[in-house]
Length: 301
Length: 292
Image (cartoon, rainbow over all chains, first blue to last red; front, side, top):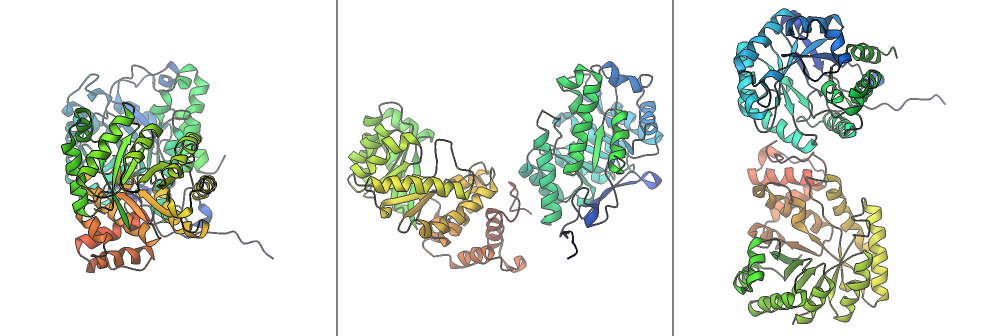
């Protein structure tokens, strides 16, 4: 008797989110099978790789993290271009300067930098605020306004501040990152609230990405369950693509700070794990890992 | 279903203050209100009862019996308080509860025989709450075998599967319904009870009632004998009395997987259907489950 592989068909489909405008536009998600299940259906848009750029020169990066970018660390535009030279699909600009616990830079200054970067590169842009729930309202609504029409992917949008930020994103034509604190029930709750005013195909989920040894298995489980619930069980409040913002989390670990090779592996192993869990976009710090993940995605290793 | 009123609970600040001041009014008001609302038992939850367990328990039992003729469910982890409570009860009380924990088997379970009470036995063991149906069955069968040896018949035993909050573990919530359905085959004659409001612990207050009521109806369908519940929730008592047959019917249909046309239903009916699906584990819970 011939062997016949047991194949599944699924009732749900991940929403296809388009970010960036015109020729820059990039599709994320859209698959109707589980991650890497090429044998059960076509995955039109493979996982996308982003490298991160800070809007102010980093103060706590190790020497080897700075090395690939050493000439451009105080120039976000040049830095972003460098990321694309390293093979990133897109750039993730982190507005660290706006953090009230740090430089507390004003919103309009940060928004001007976003505008410059967005105009200078021929790829879409992800923008993360500092994560301060109150300041992010000011910063991200300003970014949305100044960059109207750029179709940025911006966040984090959280339970505490989703209303003003999602409204600004909607008014000015951007996509948003819905962030919840490693909890699938809270993730769903935020999605349900957002969906009342915001279209599903413009939301990307950030369930938080913890590093290897620091809770990565929680992130893995939540991403995996999100795909199960959205794709296998067809829950349309859980069908958005997922972003794994893991580079900076890995870099914070003791192990990554200890030595170069360990740091590289820490990010690489976390990245490949979250890819398998279902991440549609990875935000990485190290160009070497961007190259490595590309080979993983393309099936070369 | 036999309803055990849950409101006299030491965790409530009012109750705790009343005990400290030995002021019976708050306790007696709660006992009267629950009696009037249709409770069959009054639960007296003393928690660990660390201070003056005998005196406090006796005082509380007397306070309740001063205004209500209902039997009392003496609910404490402290064997000394338990014994004092059972001794003070005029009507045949409910010992709430024994479990598969070693200390409980040694110190609490024998009190049920000594005072000829009904006894709640939970599935808890020394390792905590068993993680799945099989291990719950294993635990409860072992403890019931011991109870039988002590001379406690199945008919006096009320099995408690331990209900977890739906916001914490949806699968266990659905499993408990199945567990209740299996009891009569496994241990003929045993009764059952649950701490119903646990299912909605962690859910915003305004949405707790519908979770409790729906879950009661689902468990009742599988044969649940009693529930420790919020009897001051009028709709819950009405549902239990069979005064809302349409809602019950809708919950049953949803449990059976029958297609229900949400568009033809009222808001309230839709909410019951959505809640049933969440409690069955069919849709993922979130605090906004009624909004999607």
